[in-house]
Image 1 (cartoon, helix red, strand yellow):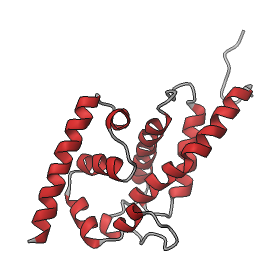
Image 2 (cartoon, one colour; image 1 turned 45 degrees about the horizontal axis):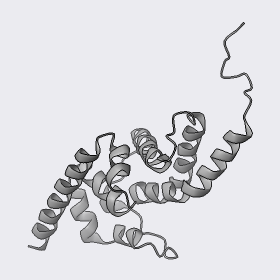
Image 3 (tube, rainbow, N blue to C red; image 1 turned 135 degrees about the vertical axis):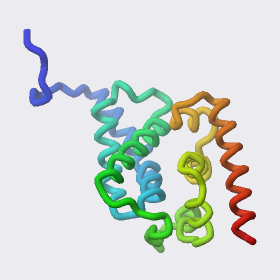
Image 4 (cartoon, rainbow, N blue to C red; image 1 turned 90 degrees about the horizontal axis):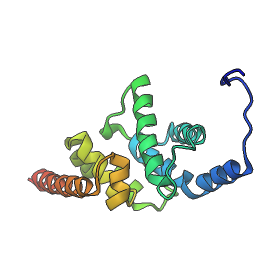
Length: 173
């Protein structure tokens, strides 16, 4: 009996195919928007595909009922790896959002003051705020993406909001 190598074909069940099809239909757009908001439009399609490839390969690890938080967390890792490979994009250099998109969160990325205040926050605060405000995560979902408990996520969000408010006020002066 020999161990299976990655080059040997594997059988894919109809259940796996149906699960993945449903995952893509329900969450691919949200993952794409998450990546666009963090890295601009340029590589978002490729990065979304990379996230979905990871989901397929690790389908046994994706928690049932918490697929989207798992995908956001995976997208953060995929994006971090991508950024290590290419020159980092400064928040002030983000491309303008597409005109055809009616997403207010994407329009906010184009606002100079929003960019400036967000850029001045610690990366973790920025991540928490973007997950809550732009991705609509809260409570258990936010905790799952951050890899911490629910109480810790709630406290981290509260602290990040307080620091954002202070930075916003300071930027008015």
